[in-house]
Length: 498
Image 1 (cartoon, rainbow, N blue to C red):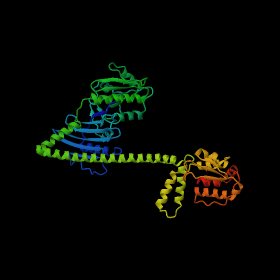
Image 2: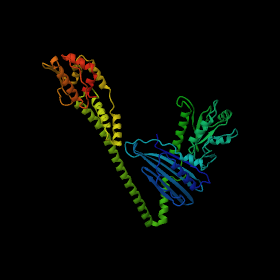
Image 3: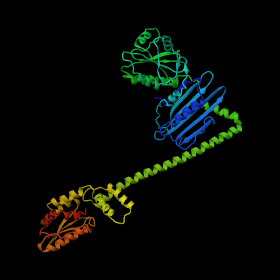
Image 4: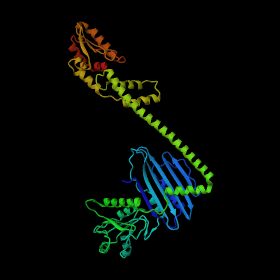
């Protein structure tokens, strides 16, 4: 996998620098999620030979140069990706010269840190926009364009030039043959558009033409719907057809595209200027125009401006780091609150899992009924109530108390122990305190009314706000009293306070 892509194609003799810059600027405006143009007013491109736009981790640099009978202009767009630790760059320069005029475009993925993984960049959309603007020029016998070149039945001479590498001097040529099942026109159009600016896509007119050129001596031509790659000066060097290694058209077209990119990036000779050479020539022209002293002052001002921007970037980086720390702290606090809530439930000694949150929900409901609440207070309570919803387990515990043969059978797993005196049964909890009140039950008929009073006092201690109606006299034995508690679910619910 390569971490860069390099493209060069001839441009039209009527191409203008201003048209190139305007198209490039339109491309920059169309970049997804760009913020370069939110606050900065762009100068008129014809008034300046250099300007820089910067916003956050994005930068766009334009330069223009005239000299030695040539004219050139270019841009460099860079965008950082902190998550992946890489910088994506796109450089594009158009050179207008008497002998040859061309556009060089290079896309790169540069690592910012040692552990970063670079990726292969795709062909920038800028190529399509430049060709849409009519800047594609002639490449020997071929025209740089977005659509396929359809050969005619009598174009055998042109086909021979393609076979031997004479039809184009800058870009490779992809030959697409005709088979029993011809390729869809839309498929070929998309293929030519994908390779536009990188290769010329040439299609055969018919199956008969395919058979006729295949019978000619010389380099083997594609047949049966296969395609072939012809390089400038070399001719056909490889054929691609559907088979075990390339099972479908997508695999065939992708293999051909990868070979085209490899040729353009590593083996194709360069004719125009790239961004580095444009910068060098622009700096030399500035030195000659301003003189050494003025040029040095210009460079010092330029470096000071960059230094100020670097300092601002560092400040923004520190602010971003602070915000991230705050976010991590907030996340930690949220986790800490959850851990504390679980610890509080353990310390509370819940009779069942979720009892603490059930009681918090009840308290929130009581608080929301207060009359002196402000609108914001009521909204805050409503929001928190959604968090502390009822678990529904309290109702199950009340039913268990009502069904149990003895109250201690239900409350015993929570730590309650039964103690017997001469006249009373007393359920006590080792932890004691307000969270675990004692429960007293009468045993003798003589304690009939006193037992009723004692029981009422215990329930009122568990829920002071509740007014209990007069209860029926307790039976003489503890088991009989437990049956009375089961018959009256309000008693159990009063004890739980839910």
